[in-house]
Amino acid sequence: MDFTVDTMCGRLVSYLRFCGYDTEYIEQREAGDRAAIADELESAGRTLITRDHTFASMADRAILLTEVTLDEQLRSLSAHGVHLSLPAEPIRCGRCNGELDEVVEAHIEPPEYVPTDLDEELYRCRSCGQYFWRGSHWDSVNNRLDSVLPPEE
Ligand SMILES: [Zn+2]
Image (cartoon, protein in one colour):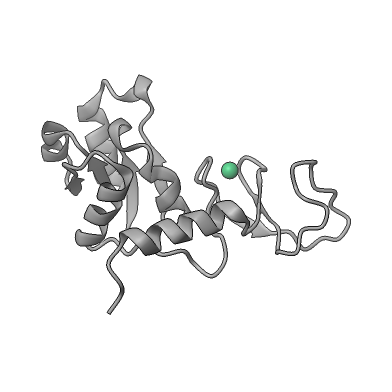
């Protein structure tokens, strides 16, 4: 499943990307032309996630959320059959939706925000160049999913 997330559900975007889903976000400035967006979604085979009843009815495939908080929205997505768990290694950039490559070249000099004593594999986004690793943010996403979602059968 690939997703397009409406403006009112923006906090879900990075969670879906962390879980490995191809996830686009509708920026506020684009949100006006809903009919055109619905058409694009249909041809791209994307599922719309929105809190807007009218918008959901325009899309071929949509998940209509009534929940407001992030935890409730995550729970609702899970109830709609969206499997939410972190993959063994990061797949997608939480910032731009680009795909990540593991950094294997020893000669690459990572930017300053990457800890020099990093004990984890390092990944780099093909699109925006951001570096990622399984650090405290990854753990906090994992913990939140664990605490919010019902245990898997
Ligand atoms: Zn990126």
